[in-house]
Length: 174
Figure 1 (spheres, rainbow, N blue to C red):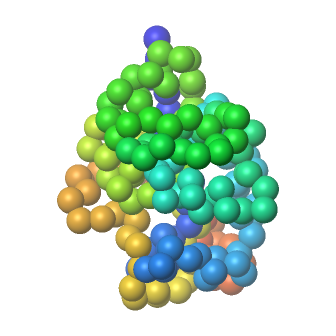
Figure 2: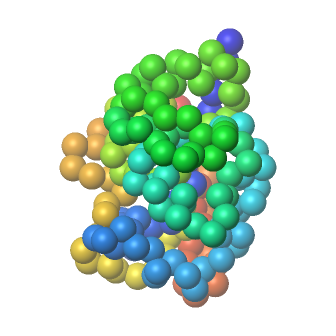
């Protein structure tokens, strides 16, 4: 069986933050996710893995944005989750093995520097697709928290977008 491709699609500030210190991302509002390929990304993935904080942010949205299975990596029970949402422990190797055994071919990774750090540590981050927003937040939640292992990447795509933003795609170096 072929291992699934793990594809992370996110936005970050120029100084590598994915949210303000309070978790807000109001600074992203002037930028359309469609301009950065979010629709194509969502159409291609079979399942989504996200951390608990990302789940809480997305769950608070007026509409749940996922039609595909979502696996939330958390140690806490999830109350009143949408039907396609399942909680999993923080054992990322077990989560990765389970999703592979279930036949998922392309797994979307959404948010959470801790989750991304963990996936890099177990060799499961294959594609990093980002909207890089021309704003220095200063304080905020980093995409790559302290302790993130080294990950060599190859640049596959870099396109300028409106407002001076960039749409970049990296793949894990072979």
